[in-house]
Length: 311
Image 1 (cartoon, helix red, strand yellow):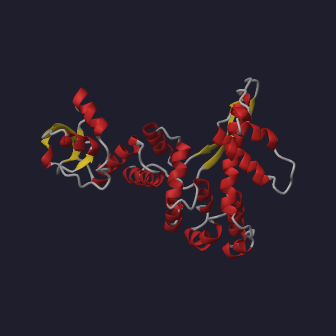
Image 2: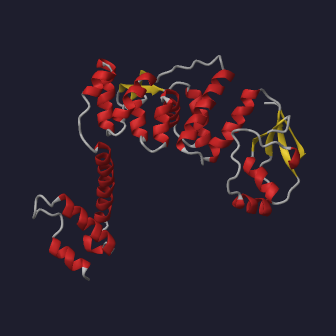
């Protein structure tokens, strides 16, 4: 990378880069600059466009600075774009959709800048020989080789994400049709649902999304398997006609979390009467609802509950 450093007037710099995140709260950064000065210089192109350091730029302006140290990058457009993407990736305040789009674009640029490297589209499963745990014999184990592994490892070091997480994020962004992305952005689809839906072609995603977006993940898995073998139309016919499927899924997930938390508290010796009154009331209401058809099989004794609530 061709770079050199110097000082530039802030008024001469251009915050026109679409990757810059202007207008965010920089008060903590201002305090840091006032205390220890500007540690990292701004990164700009030779025509004064800011490539990295938008928040530092904003903080300096707010503090009344008129100039700042800069690193000037004299490279191709793709390399300059990659610098801006890297700046956003390491800051970790992107939402999930933005992160996935940035990762996908970073991969595209890396591929363009490294055409000699081989990029497979799917993970490859290979068999290798390894010693068993007590090192008494060799065993054959299966290992998954992710596509663009070198790129994934580079990004993993920058972001703290695992190579597998990065691969799955890029895969979602590459394979998801725009209506799937919009549904996910609007909170209509979870990450797990999206991971299954993108296994379909974009055309099939469009056809099936209205019918399957309320299904739990296990039903979407079945749908995708049927769609691939029998076609989307037949898979739609086989969708179980369960009303309120999405609501049931949300309740199931919530109850599983509650169950796990209650087990943790039980190990610490926490019993029902130790809970705050409002939580006791909520738990009583839930158990009353779930057992209104099967009295008197309550998880807790109602009379004991009333005694606790009247304390």
